[in-house]
Image (cartoon, rainbow, N blue to C red; front, side, top):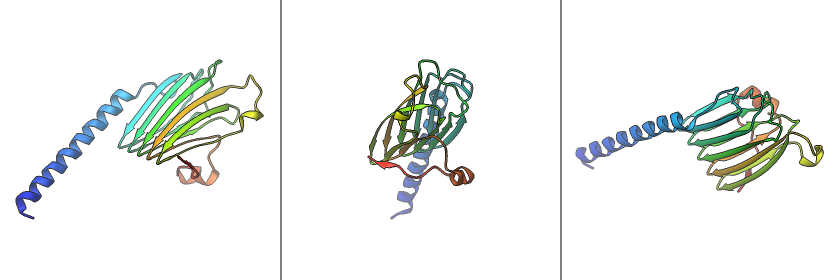
Amino acid sequence: MSQRTLLRAAFRLVLIVAALRALAAIVSRRGNAGDAESDEFSIATFMGGMERVSRATSLRHGRVLACLGGVEIDLREATLAPGGAELVLRACLGGVEVIVSPEWRVVFEGKALAGGVDARVTPESEFAADAPTLRVRALAVLGGVEVINEPDDEDEAAGDAVPGTRDG
């Protein structure tokens, strides 16, 4: 390979990395709305990660997209709206982990394509009909989505994602 060919390849690589970084900045700026107290939120990460603890007083809706990165959301300090709440979770070459209150009924609908989705929560049958309900729609493509009641003690101490996904 000639020196000129190597220089062209290096230049193309630099352009690709710069374009990806610019795209990541745009996705993060435009795809994020709400804060820890918001009753509706949207989180998007591209080539990065984010952690959020929600303290919403009437959580209604949340949307998460993790592409080439990860998102961890802790909803244990939040209160659901009287009619319940909905989360739409998407992971592409990344992961989403949501920790929910064990007092919430979680209705989980997940699909995976060469990835995994999992809900390790209290079974729906153990709740009264009027229990606070969180509806979750999850899609994982070459990634993972997980909804859990409580993190494992050793996982929380280590700061690692909780293992055990169901392959799609």
